[in-house]
Length: 331
Image 1 (cartoon, rainbow, N blue to C red):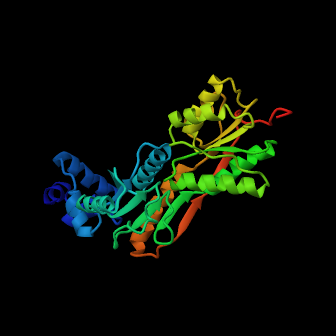
Image 2: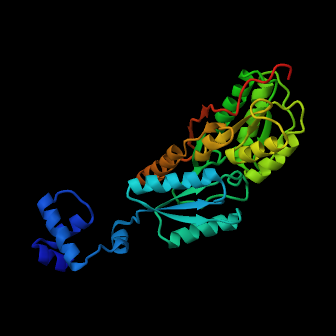
Image 3: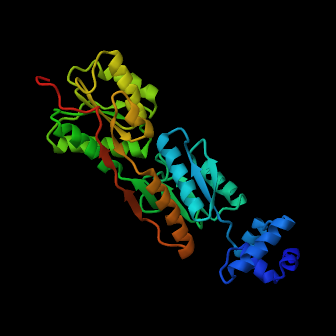
């Protein structure tokens, strides 16, 4: 830094201000200092700067699955939003969701020097008595039923499921079958509960629930079963990937979509508009979820211990495409 100051003809303090992006330096002086940095090959020591400030400009992200589209898109949105705020992201996948693994993940992130943590926790874990997040760490949780102990950001799972079921009922279907996600998933439970409640509220008897695991393969297997149900004219799939497998199975069994069976998905993945037929689905705003997670955890850092227990739900919306229609007369 002293060499840069000597070459640029300024004080070391001015070099420090330029290096840290502080105001109070004229553009000519800033350009002069930056030119000297380039000539000397000088790069600010981020570790030393972090120790001085007590801030590492890095957010840790703990996730229990990178196999689901929702988690991947949420992670992408978090990384994008963090970069806009000048923060890097350190990712730490956790293979087994247990208390020891959670504590170990926080310990490892502490060693990697992060300022706060975002947890993408699709499964039921924080509501278990044996599992909790370490105290003294600023945390925001995405996609979880974390109760009133943590700040939570999620999409409106129940609202999206209600819209899907109501859309099919409004088209004239007597009832709606449901291809649900895995039993341990918070999102799957919310969507299944809303499906059941919406049907009973409309005076319809919910058919037997069919269970998948978010994958297209599980959707295909479920579709083979549903294709043999003569009373099935409408299916709400808990995600688009299972809906994709479902469409294939129905096609192979000679059940036309939407002439014989209407299908609604959930997520609105980019490929859903190119399914055959294009998929009616519930759009989730993953970019907004990621943005709110980052802004939430940065706000908690600035306020140093803001109260826990707030939950923010990002609205969903129905995207109508060609996979849904009124049932054929006589069905």
